[in-house]
Amino acid sequence: MGDLPAVIVSGIVSGSAYALLALGIVIIFRSTDTVNFAIGDIGTLAVFMTATMIAAGLPIWLGLIAAIVIAGLLGIITERTLIRPLGHSRNYVFIALVVTIGLGLLIHAGIFVGWGTRPQAFPVLIEGTVKMFGIALTWNKILAAGIAAVAMIAIAWFFKKTPFGIAMRATADDPVAARMVGIDSGRVAAIAWFLGCGIAAIASFFLAADTSLNPNLTLSPLFRAFAGVFLGGLTSMAGAVIGGFTIGVLDNVAGRYISASYRDTMVFAIIVLVLFIRPAGVLGAGRKERV
Image (cartoon, rainbow, N blue to C red; front, side, top):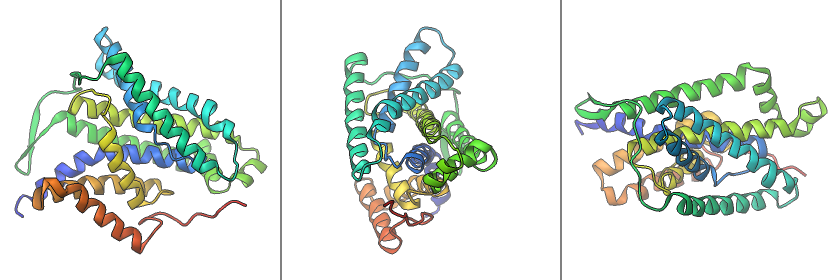
């Protein structure tokens, strides 16, 4: 157990991608009651499009910004064309869930057609490694964790301090009352989808730099991000972030001290245990059904 600090640090760094994806999922869910299963594929598509621009000469830093903007715009288009027309019928949540799953499959197939199935090399923002607690971590991974932290702090500030962020929180808490005081719910939904998908692009960008760019880039991380969401609470942005980092640490601890073959089993066994005790998640609040 002497290497536990190193395992924890590595887990936190790896968990930054899970935390970003989890945060994007919760932002969209709280604003539009939609569990966006396509968020990972939207982020992946944005990075593939950005990779083409980088290959044509776009600087890597501008590539990150381009990926965020592209994913955000794809999110707005998705909300406007596929989610908003559904209205708020009794089966809205289920229908929207199926729609986003279908969208993810279509995007996945589109990536296959446009870029092929083979992994592609993707440039890193910063080269080199550094040792922490006896383990070597790439500067790119550390930078990813740092940018993830900054993004999360910026989102927290936006929702707590800016008028529009407060309006988005009000819409999430009571959409009927928000409409009565003149808050444009359509605009709130568009901004939420832009933010959620843009954050997913950040996670996808650094995942590609850390491994390689491939159509299944966010498949496993999204699986863990949803675990973090359920652990922290589907209605809590802070809970989603903490849950994502926790999953990263649990994943590493289970793989190091139990077995790499059972790391998923151990992580989700702990989550199921937590949800038995607190179904809404550690920081989640019970939801009121609309009638």
